[in-house]
Image (cartoon, rainbow, N blue to C red; front, side, top):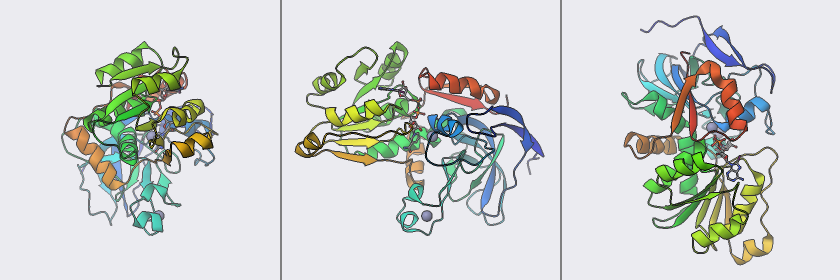
Amino acid sequence: MPSIPKTQKAIVFETNGGPLLYKDIPVPQPKPNEILVNVKYSGVCHTDLHAWKGDWPLATKLPLVGGHEGAGVVVAKGANVTNFEIGDYAGIKWLNGSCMGCEFCQQGAEPNCPDADLSGYTHDGSFQQYATADAVQAAKIPKGTNLADVAPILCAGVTVYKALKTAELSPGQWVAISGAGGGLGSLAVQYAVAMGLRVLGIDGGDEKAKLFESLGGEVFIDFTKEKDIVGAVQKATNGGPHGVINVSVSPAAISQSCQYVRTLGKVVLVGLPAGAVCESPVFEHVIKSIQIRGSYVGNRQDTAESIDFFVRGKVKAPIKVVGLSELPKVFELMEQGKIAGRYVLDTSK
Ligand code: 8ID
Ligand code: ZN
Ligand code: ZN
């Protein structure tokens, strides 16, 4: 049996927007249905920044340990857990647990459960060295997997994979990724390429343009330089993309996607800017018969499938690894839109 310490390092905040304290806290005890994961690496998702700021209409627990892209090793488990053994690799994801009995859980829409328990939001998450997770929802990660590389798959990967399925596109069709250079976006480009789609990306700056091309994207539009985004997107895709995956944190970019999407196309909403409204002019919406769909992480099957793409080498998030204590700096860069790809925290530093 691995020896489990009584205390551990974590990043904790006591008020939304308050100090991000790097400090020692007790190691949690798994409940009968939970595993205890020694988190080795955790990705930093923009959702963690929303949680810290408290800018969504859903309260976080306080004090809170954020984080929901945790990859690590199972070191203990509750008496009822039969699907994980000590030493297995496991992933902490956004959906920590759900009721499994409501009409949404029963049809596999577990993220939409009204009683969903959320890692790094209503349940202490992966910005600590030891985190608990409901064994039913915890992700299975094959032994031998690189835990730093797989971490971003646990939210960003699952989410964009599900969003692409929600767009119901066929190989050879155009998909636009709005926010293509960020954490979700850079993975969305790769999943889309792996699915045989033609990819147009929108984001800002040369670093993100270069990253986009290195990931297999075909056309990049820089929103900081292009004045007529709608016209440029429609021209490059010969009439507009068949689907749009919105992973930016910009209400204007989201509404714009309803204008440039192709006739009969699908606009998928993923990014969650605070207080945003998606505006679609009703006349064009009807005449073009477009569809706007929300997509929220993924269920257990989506998780397994998205991890499988990673294991088979089809997708790999462009990551930068820094110590857990560096989280405040990562949030600062994220707020400024300066992160190309994903930052991953090493919990040992
Ligand atoms: O299940 C879900 N729906 C889900 C899951 C995970 C994350 C939703 N999210 C949400 C997050 O809460 C956040 O609101 O998706 C959003 C994006 O998360 P992220 O990818 O982790 O954020 P990022 O790495 O900061 O990337 C955002 C990108 O958007 C670009 C930025 O430059 C950055 O690269 N961007 C912005 I801000 N404005 C833009 C614009 N006008 C833009 N790109 C194009 N046009
Ligand atoms: Zn996330
Ligand atoms: Zn439920």
